[in-house]
Image 1 (tube, one colour):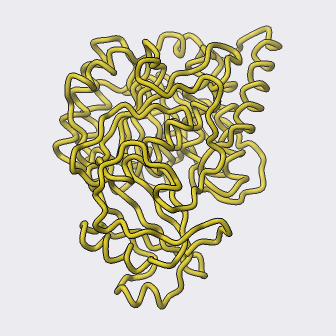
Image 2: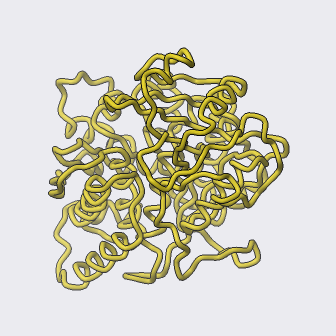
Length: 410
């Protein structure tokens, strides 16, 4: 059930709860869709060698993605409606995975936030334009092999997954079934991913963090919203910046008040696309993205709004700067916004004061991901981007953007 030639038969995960915190691709018997995650120079393997501080800590959903090709008959046999997204329970997930036995697929440590963190870790993987960046994630995975797979894949990409696995817990998964007509049917099993608890360990991590970035999908879960609020409060107390990703229009609509409560009281940075930005503002589709960007920047110090192939906007204190798109031949737009966010974070951490320079880098990072198959920024591309950006910074004698003072005040 995969277009890849290196995929292997799918194992039966339906009843596999064998504890594992270090499962590998071979253990799982799957083909890895992220084949460019060899450890970089500053990669660490033991908790004893963890850094004293984190440049960025992500708080989000930890889910393993399974993806591959199926035919219509496969969907009909399982009673699945093509092109829909459905939340399934443990038994339903097991039924689908058993049906996949003998098929082939690809697996990845998935998620919007993890895409951003991996790209950021790769951009900052070498001391180019500054020290290597320390990037980490906190979330919730089970003690099953899938949890070990998720932790291992992020670790190999230089993103340290710092939350301990939950004993006897099951790791969340998203099964993406693509038919020949390119329609995707998605089955999401939340598992432990929806249970992110605030505890002394998380508080300690936040106290050692420069930027805390919270994934918007966590707002779907009432108990997790409490965790978000406490995490943001701790970040504010310790002087860390708080970034929020919008994640999804329908999620914003369902939890509008909760989003705004966090944004108005804690957020320093917001990442959204044009539709999400308009939803935050209660604007109609007729309103321009720049209007939404300006409006949001009255409440959040730094606003990043992407508008697909039309470009993007950065808003600061009621003003917005337009960022032209970086030219490319699009192959796969999935993950473009995640990559863009990594470019913004990289610029902020490197002390860039020119909004247009920062946006241009983010746009370039996004264009590189759009021009490839897959959602992850490749290591070699990240190194080229970081070197090019560092050279541009050194050769620029004057920072001219009117928003530089506001950015430095962050």
